[in-house]
Length: 280
Image 1 (cartoon, rainbow, N blue to C red):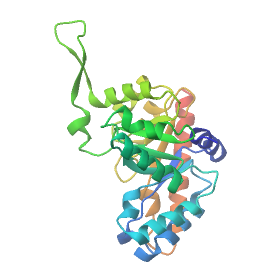
Image 2: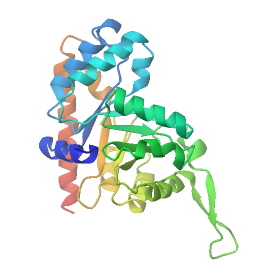
Image 3: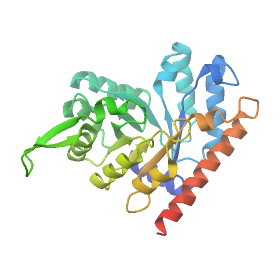
């Protein structure tokens, strides 16, 4: 089963567009740095029927060294087989190195999908895209404040119809290239909820692509605006990622129960908003 088929089944089964980011911060874990795997297992057990996917960010595991990598292995083993897992690694390098990254993410770790950087171009993405059963999410419009530093830079795209050359912001050029590169139907975009107007423009450009949407919750992204501008014609096409709002809903012994309630609240709010938007 390919990633997007597995994703569609999880979306339908749990009536959910919610993805929980599994990003363990030892300073905030109720179980301490030695309890990363146990913490993540408890979160997964409490939320697996509420999500369409999980998204571990590899940085949080790599920062813990060997114990962190063991915790990542244990975390992945705890995810039910019918829930897809996105490895948030933002890999991107020359082709032969990208091929090694693809083997690491897909063959060693077993992720169903991965995030990648577009900066090195098509040949750096091909080792990921050639795995037709895996998903690839291309970083396009990120959720952080510094996104505008590079992603808004004007790019010359043609002569235009007037005296001035035609330009588009870099993130739109990335999206346009992504459409060209998506020959196998397994490429999506990372688009932050903190920039809903840009998200809407990208949906117009890429009406059939799936967007992985970080930035809701701790980063202050607008959930309603993101859904209103980002849902596709079928009322889907989005994976709404929430991490800290769910993981650290409580710092006490009730952390798993609190995480479930936080995830349930977000899942149900997404469901409510989808119904409102589709009825208009």
